Image (cartoon, rainbow, N blue to C red; front, top):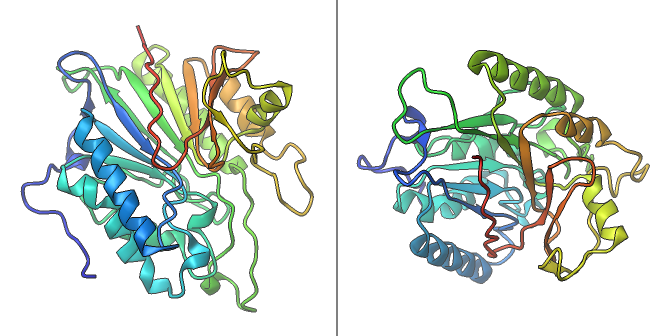
Length: 314
């Protein structure tokens, strides 16, 4: 398949601010765990569902919340570009801006997340960024400000979208001389947490106020597992609760030993952070209110399933 390039009429999203609609709304469609490369027929069905959702919704931004590609199903490193091109086709066709996080399946022996990032950011409507360098930081750590509908150059954002790379999976072959599968840490790195705390403080200082925010990350944090263990109520937390929450740090050689605690602590101490959205657990689709704050800890998005939750920042 030839590499798809944005046409001249497509909006240059990187050069434009994300803004509220004239009605003061901002709708985000989240697609998580698309897992391209496992089966061509399944990939075609995924594209069909994405087209259906995006054709029926008035969307200002699409978030691809991790596991875009199943790295273990790829056989050649060069294949990653064609899968990225297929995934973003419904977005490019509609001139929609999008932002991604990467998941554990986006990094495997035959799949380098660096190549996913390189291919994805060729598109003008890709807002995916890399704000933190370092071999253990991952890639998709950044934020996007959302401005009022009629915003001037000195306008204050209405809210901030934070994106974090929870990593996981395995290092690509090129990074491993003995050609053995080497696992990556599956939690947000300390260096990223330091950047997050500093960047948030800078935003508060720059604009002279706390700006409400949302956070997107592929692998959920431990409070979701703890809440699940306490009992997910079908009436209070409606949705699907079909599998164990596999939090950051789960499945490692040591098991869960609070690897994500620094990240959790940073989020809980971030004034104005309203909710987090995660993927990873395919058979979970619920949300819950964290007991120690006003932070909504949201459950995993099913692939193809659009979760609707209205959030007001007034």
